[in-house]
Length: 224
Image 1 (spheres, one colour):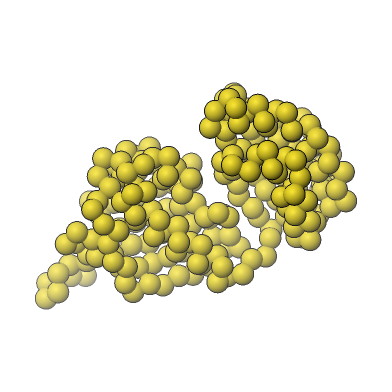
Image 2: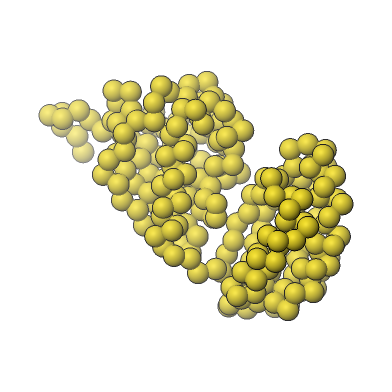
């Protein structure tokens, strides 16, 4: 499904990612409502390009959007929320990355901390379906042992050993390092161990891109 396209503008807002159905019933709703959704969106004044294309997986669609500016993108979001498409597909998993939209830094940081704390929750950690939406496809973690973990490694490790508690976070600091990316730094006391953690969260909703944990030596022990 190919839409019209124009050269990139500085004010442009783009969205890219995937629409991921859980089952055939959700996929059927997408197929039923998608033609009208495409037509209505491409007719919007600020729409530069809008594509929702099937992938090799019959439950997954690739989404690419371009809007002239933030006002056009926000107007699109408001229209979609009240549309037949919005109602029919409201519960379907969306894994999107938005670029070019100005965002309140405090809101970005708050969302990143909320995601970080959710990822520390043992109830979430033991359920891969709860963890998956929090991780980017290319996420990398460097564990306290120095081992490098991929996304699949993280999912398996958390499911096997979710821990008994979320631990206690201290010495919080945060920094917005890109329009949609937040770096978190903190100390975690967890099951008798203390470590300094750094996490990089990207997108709205935020998804983890990188995480590293470094053990903190006990007090009174020399370290560098």
